[in-house]
Figure (cartoon, rainbow, N blue to C red):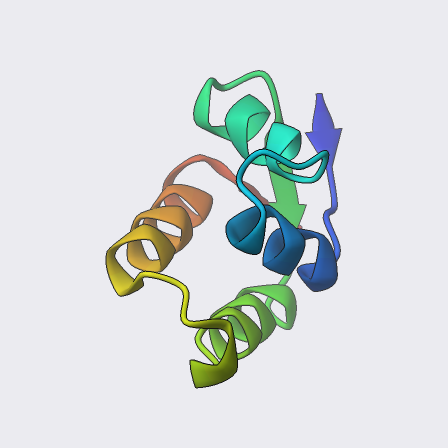
Length: 75
């Protein structure tokens, strides 16, 4: 399945790993979901998810962005 996922959904997924939005993260990790993104979305993900107020583990964020670039579909 190919999907565009709003940045706020990823914030929720990172902050609430047992929540509904995190199921998308699992689907992406398990290659059941392929992300579509453009040149504006990737920097937005990086900027918003990297905000100190969210305190998202930097290693998890880097792994997510690396996988996005490697397996996502740039449109």
